[in-house]
Image (cartoon, rainbow, N blue to C red; front, side, top):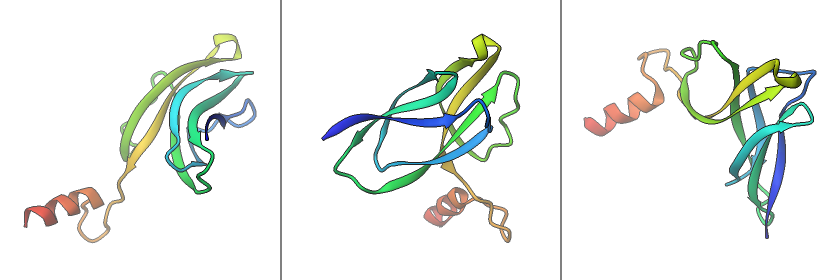
Length: 117
């Protein structure tokens, strides 16, 4: 059976610019919005799947430098909290790369280099 599940990304007491949460494997995010002054993601999930995967999100205010984030950001929505006094842009971090200490190449760069050799 498929259903829509709500995942909390933030509360008024804990605003973190980067958050990783467990979500049902293959969950499809439909919308991110403000619910009772919290940021929540609504996802279509298959209830027959018991496996969870960790998914990462970035909540950034306007003007925040995102260039230090190592990965691909997929924009989901902009939400307003505290009667519009706090505006957050929500992204999912869909691809992470880890720099190899020896080569200085990311895993993605190493795979591309290996494929071209």
